[in-house]
Image (tube, rainbow, N blue to C red; front, side, top):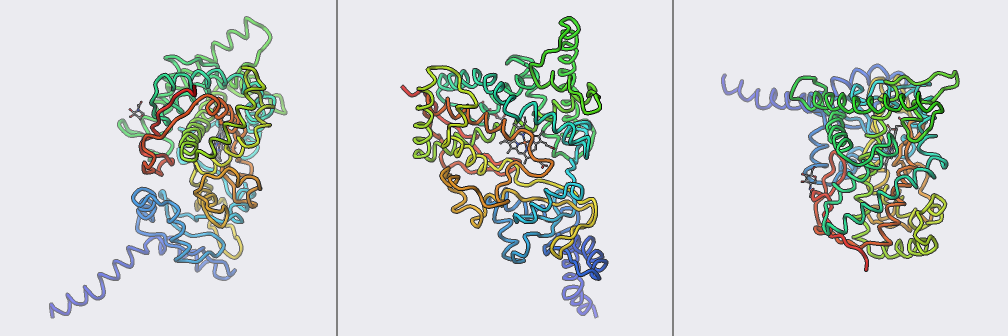
Length: 486
Ligand code: HEM
Ligand SMILES: *[C@@H]1O[C@H](CO)[C@@H](O)[C@H](O)[C@H]1NC(C)=O
């Protein structure tokens, strides 16, 4: 008797429980949906939603953190479920979702901005009134202003001159040190330049304090939102409060100046935001200005710093590319006789611009871009259920050999031709496309110019392993020896 019960357990109940555990989320989210929509012929994309609560998180971390082969996470799905239309169902980061990794579905999502909205899990940290948190017409209103203020030729012409002196002296200081951790140093200079463009902060103790505060704030963007002393989220909120206080002081000073000076002058982005009037003549409130300044800093900070760091890495690894870059920039430099370069010079730097595109393609600051479906959406016979996340796996677009030949090779010459439609989405797309994409390219161009003309450097650990989370970065932070070319 007891033997049969035991046998029944081993043969029946244990596998059943195991099966249930393994397919828990699929059953929980999947089957009812499948039944409900079977009449219309649509079905959920293929995939596996994994175990309770964690979903597929462990598999994801396995590929990203343990194997350090992030693209094989998608490759394994393609092998298991076929290519289909490039959508797989999953459960990641605490919610059911669809991975999208083909150009056609990516394009569809970017262009259907009312069906798929960009939602931050921690809006309180992003800033409730910021460009990233607001939707619809409120978003378009602030977007058009910000794009005009930092991403259009007039603004870029001014910014090129504004940020150049600091880039030049920074490179000199690196050469004096002789040996640097590039990721630390590129962060520092990026932040100093952002401080200058956005709120006329000069390098010094206040800016250093802000930098620390932003580090804490940015950690909270991805943290679990429990506001309790000791949590990352709590710390991030505190940092945010203190950073906002520093900006508020700046606003007050600016207002005083404007009262005294009469005519309003626009020197930085903060002035611009303070003076901005929409079609109805309405101005932004102080809180709106503050939220957007903070938002722009974290949007432009890590992304630019990481791309700059990767440029140093790849150029050290590909001396032929560096040689060509140097030749082009030395020619420009000779024609300038020591003057600062302008955006007109940058537009002539054809090879440099290819190096920039290739650097950004391989940096993959954002492995994926998140959207939430606001309604049940159908795409080519498959269903994306309401309230599910859709993760546009842009990293895979850039590392898929079907889109880019020998994708992990740093080859600026591939940009002699345009990328295939929809395969190059480093800055996102649709109404939420990056508001600082031209500014990011400009900063890289100016940096690469002065770098390649005046300096040489070598990687200390050329074979350092790469960490892929939260952003791709060699574990040594790209340690280099750095010196002036005699
Ligand atoms: C290489 C550097 C950069 C990369 C790879 C990058 C990438 C991106 C991506 C992928 C998005 C879209 C996010 C989404 O659709 O949800 C985005 C949005 C944004 N980026 Fe960038 N970015 C870079 C530099 C910058 C800079 C320098 C700034 C400004 C200072 C900036 C400001 C923004 C803003 C404000 C948004 C939000 C736009 C909106 O919600 O409408 N970015 N960026
Ligand atoms: C670089 O930054 C990391 C993290 O902030 C820090 O631990 C490390 O000491 C820094 N290295 C140098 C050489 O400054």
